[in-house]
Amino acid sequence: MFALVLLAATLGGSRPAPAPHGERVRIPPGSYRPLYAPSGAGRVHVAAFSIDKEPVTRADFETFVRQNPEWQRGAIKGVFAESAYLSDWRSATDAGTEGRQRPVTEVSWFVAKAYCTWRGGRLPTVDEWEYVAAASATKRDASDDPSHEAALVTTYAQRAGHSIRDVGSSRPNAFGVSDLHELVWEWTSDFNSVLVSDDSRSMGAGGDERDHHLFCASAAIGATAPTDYAAFLRYAFRAGLTGRSTVRSLGFRCAGSV
Image (cartoon, rainbow, N blue to C red; front, side, top):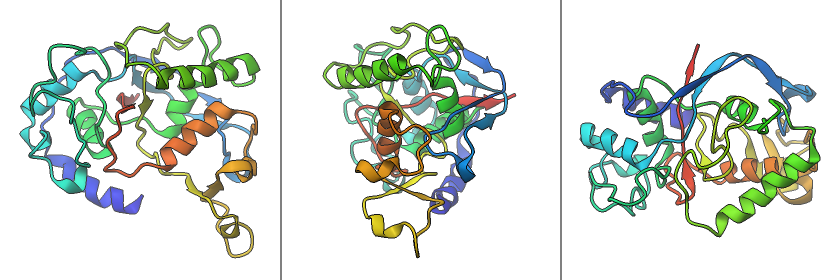
């Protein structure tokens, strides 16, 4: 994470601008059950914050790159994004005429961070995102509802076989936030705060149990809910990312402190 912080320090040149689209929802303080709780704590407290009701769209992001040429495809420095950055756009400043209200994807962490700064916000933390995402349509904390967790796994599986839909196409959850699970994975500011290893020898004697959790069966060691497969999928996906990653199924939304 330290290397990301150093590189992110160069992002301060983006010009501030009002949000081109979207509504931000105020989230009250509360707590949630993380997949891996620090120091064995069962729940983690989350302070009040605000978060976009919907993911950032292709149309939103088109406005951003037109006003910030340094983040356009072809102009962006390779250290900030992989070669697939906005590869499905018609041009560096044209997202195309179709799918403009779909979530923007193929955007790296660095660019997502710059966009949220431009909008006067920031990326949500893992704790903030997971806290809001634990809600169902009727309950602000559905983490103890096995049917809700099973439905999320089904949602993720179905999402992989379909084209990405427009934002706002799913029912808002109990916080009033939409599309957290149904459309794409989403960036968080500290996506790599939990490191994943596939070598169990890194644990225990000589290993660092504070920062490493394991895939496969050993991933359940230390997990607060070993059967929360939807959470395992999210954490495993984040563990495979770098700040430069540009993935067809990965978008983002912005947040803010209150």
